[in-house]
Length: 206
Image 1 (cartoon, helix red, strand yellow):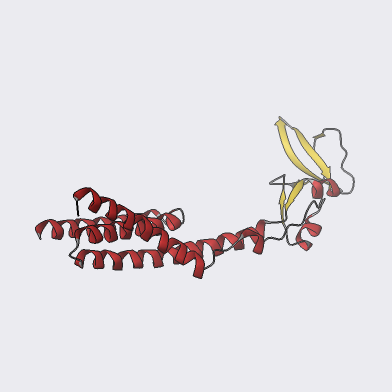
Image 2 (image 1 turned 180 degrees about the horizontal axis):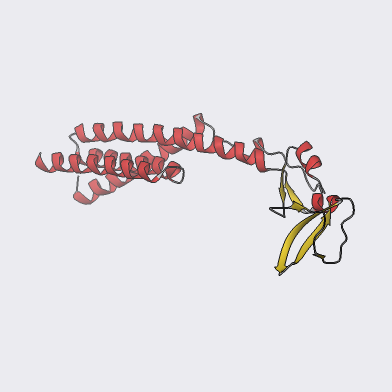
């Protein structure tokens, strides 16, 4: 077999191998889908925290910090009556303090409801776990394929299998890369680099 055909065969084996592993994992280990965690609820006009939580949503107030008041020195456009208002201090000049005040009802409406916050979190956790498991399986298969490829005597098949093993490890790493901490990325890259250097040294030495 000519050198060109050997290289072509090695490249073909590498590409087919990584696709074979990727589709094999996807066929027998289904990836979580967003719609299985968050059902479409359509348009729901929610203005209060209570209604939001009753619909399994997460309420976020537009005002981070609110202070009740009794007798501010100066209040713009509103009057405090029996502590019916909740106010935020927006300005202070000498003894004059300016508050922005709203009724309790207005405060309840001063926010928004994310109906998909909790289910989206569940989906993200499930997806992270799935990507981690895919990473473990793909890396394990890749390492085994590297060892087998290194042991084979036929150069084109050996190179193709080792190339596919490396691509499979890269595929698994990419799936879990964004969820890995920095030290995890450093360790994985270090291990892969060590394996490649060791295999390269052994192959050239042989």
